[in-house]
Structure formats: structure tokens, C-alpha cells
Amino acid sequence: MLTAFARAFRTPDLRKKLLFTLFMILVFRIGQNLPTPNVNVKVLHDTANKAKANNQLYGLVDLFSGGALLKLSVFALGIMPYITASIILQLLTVVIPRLEALKKEGQAGTTKITQYTRYLTVGLAILQGTGIVAMASTGQLFQGVSGGDQILYETGIFPIVTMVICMVAGTSVIMWLGELVTDRGVGNGMSILIFTQVVAVFPAQFWSIYKARGGFIFTMVLVVGLAIMAGVVFVEQAQRRIPVQYAKRMVGRRMYGGTSTYIPLKVNQAGIIPVIFASSLLYLPVLATQLWPDTKWLQKLQPYLQQDNAWHMGVFFVFIIFFTYFYVAITFNPTEVADNMKKYGGFIPGIRPGRPTAEYLDYVLTRITTPGALYLGLVALIPMVAFALLKATNDFPFGGTSILIVVGVGLDTVKQIESQLQQRNYEGFLR
Image (cartoon, rainbow, N blue to C red; front, side):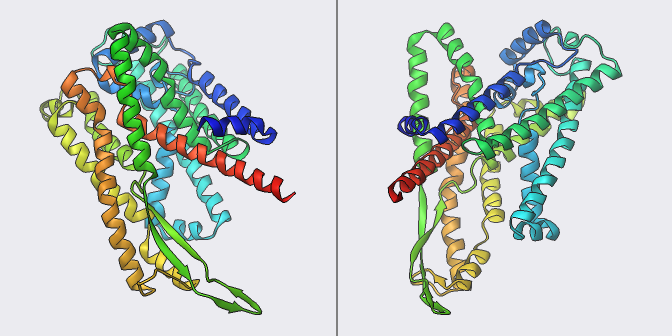
């Protein structure tokens, strides 16, 4: 990985792209630390630190926002409204025929779906921003911590509306930054911004471990974290290659086909999406207990919502497995792949084209998704198990979700850099 980056900086064209990407990341981090108007920064800082110490949920929120949400910064909502909108549009594409037709139109249809995603992102940002500012104005943003009702200087309509507008504008700017990185930088812009959000909190967590537990525990955390990361890299790279042979055919005076290729089926075909789905679904009852704390049945349910509870971990694990199969089923259509292969004269050796090919692909995909789903569930449970056994989740910054994001985005970015380096080497050779 370091070799690829060193070679990229020696190439003038790629060096410009990398420097531009780093500059966009710097702008993104400045926005995450720039507070919105009407926020008492000192009171907010003290209250947020107390809340993170008392409730692990605030630490998780701090991780996914890069520390921006608990600071009520301009970029407090982060990239999550866009990710949520993208997932919703992707699911609706399977349900709504109009969106499915747009998806098949190529670049024009993809541009239209991207436009719908932007509109939905702004709508979700308005809802989330209004909810967060409203909770901050009533003192419910940090429950059980003194000083939560003094975060804002004023609680009038105009100051609150101003704060919501700033947060929504910040989300729009984040979308623009991500698209700029995708067009003029290196890698997928949105993925790199998510990577930045997750990695941003690592230095503070490492420093707190070193001060609180000493050098030995700090070294052990690094070793265990790197070992888990190596295992995640191994599984993320694992794939089952289905061989495909294309028959020779005459088109006019030219001969086409006769080549061999393969269909790569990854062990983790769904990526991190099932973990996000499961976390969002389990967050709903937690949010309900915060909004209606006096409801009796919610009070009885509250002990089971703690991360160290065995029932909570079991339900979380089952949800991840379910959503893994669900997401793979809607994103990979074996019948469509088999029809496209048959249309262009492709076949799997030993399997008849058409329906037998679709059944074979479905059989292989089902078998390979099982270890992928179990792997996702086990990795996502790492911080919960650490908290249940050691009562010290804060001493282990390598949470399951954060590792999946860091490794996935890192591998994808390095692959893109290496492909561009290889392309330039070919150009130099041909010249």
C-alpha cells in the first residue's frame, strides 16, 4: 500500500489528484470542527464528554460523525443522510418499475437517480437537523447529564431555524465535496469522507488509552486491532470465481468470442450495508426510550437495549444475517446475469445456458453468503463482546463497523491508485 502511494506521488498527474483529495479532506475536517451559531461551545464540550463516559451510544454516534455531531458543528450530520438516501433509492429501484427502467437506461438514467438521491438527502437532513436541534434546545440531547439545557444560548424560533439551515447547508456542501473528490481526486469521494469521519476519532482514543492504561495495554490494543484488521482484509479479498466461456461467432466478416473470463462472487458480497441496517433498526427503540421516558413498557424494555446484554447481541447478530441475505438477493439477480450471458454467447462449463445457469449461480451465491453473513455478524459484535467481558469498550477503538469501513475504503482506494499507475505504465511502454 505504501509503495503504491509513493509511486503515485512520483507521477505528476496522480500527485495532483492526491493533493486535491487531501485538500478536500482538510476542508471537510475544518467544517466538522466549525460550530453552528447559537452554540455554547464550552458547555457543549463538557456535557458531551460526560455523556460519552456514561453512555456507550454517544461514543458510537461520535465515531460515525467524526466527532462532529456531539459538537453541533456545521457538518454535524456528516455523510449519513446521503448514505441513507442512497440505500433507500437502491431498495426502491427493485420495487418501483420507473426507477428500474431509469437504471437500465445507462448514464442518463443513473444521472437522474443521482438527482433524486440529492433531493432525498436534503429532505432527510432537514428532518435529522430539526430533531437534533430540537433535542438540544429542550435538554434531551444528553440525557442524565447536568448542563444539557444550557447548550444553546437562545431557544427561540429564529435561532433554531438558523441552526437547522446551517446543518442542511453543511450536508449539501459535503455532497459537493464528495462529488469533487470522485471527479477530480482519487477514489470514491463519499467513501473517502466516511473513512475520514471514522479515522478522525482514532488519535484521541489512542491517546486516552495511553494516558489511562499505560504503554503495555496501549501496545496490546494495537496488536489485537492489527490482527483483527488483517483477518478482515483476508475475508474482504476472498472471492469465488465462476468460470465463463464465450463461444466463437461471426459478425459480418469478423470473428468474436472464444475468450474465457470469470464472475467474481465475493464472500462479503453485501459489504457493510447489513450492519448499518441492523444498527439503525435497533436504534429505533433506544430513540423511543429517550423521547418517551415515562412509558412503562419502554422502561421494561430498556435493560435489553444495553450493548452488553446477551439478548441485544443475539438480535443484532440475527438481524445482520437476515439483512445480508436480503441485500444480496436484491443487488445480484442470477436470472438477469444468466440471460445476459446467454445473449452474448457465454456459458459456464458443464452448465446449460438459461435457467440451469441461473439456478447454479443462485446455489453458489447462497452457499458463499453464509460464511459472509457469519463473518459480518462476528466482526460487528467485537465492541459489544469487549464491553460485556471487560467493561471497557472505550479501551478498544477498533470497533467492528469502523474496521469494516477503514479496510473496505482503504482497499478500494489502493486498487484504484494501482490501476491508474498500471494504465500510465502501459502508455509509457506503448510510446
